[in-house]
Image (cartoon, rainbow, N blue to C red; front, top):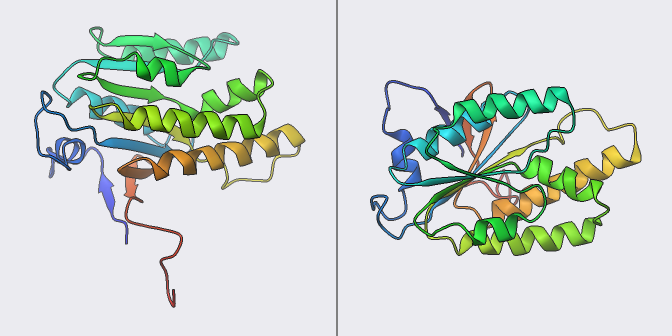
Length: 212
């Protein structure tokens, strides 16, 4: 079963390092590329944890941002997120073609991708069909899998609330849920964030359970 993990716990200060380097035990100069997917609702702690992961990488970090300042509130949110990141990090603003953005990152850089949520919304807003989005998600996940340093991806879990009242809202909910599954299938460590606590999903599959 999954286990909860206090993401700020002083009892286990090396938790983030152990997670990032779990597969090889190598330092930032090695060839490991463990990836992490952080899922959760709004204000669950996803982005903060992603930044904490990357800070502990010990090497250069490239932050790929998919948000666009469509209004004053979003612009303010973007500024707030920027202020949480170290100034020496490289920031790439790419709302649509994240496969190319990831592919252009040096292999020694840890990548923070924040987030799939807005990426899917941007694609739908630009008239990209659901099928095309699934193809792009699979292709992008493959590009991410080829990167030789950790990739930390943030995305929202939007399927646990009320059914959207509009057709576009329902399409968006379904497409993002499918994209999250595509990304999770290509990711070593998957965590669900709730109230600033992380529940590990990596060892859970749809076939586990009583009598299965």
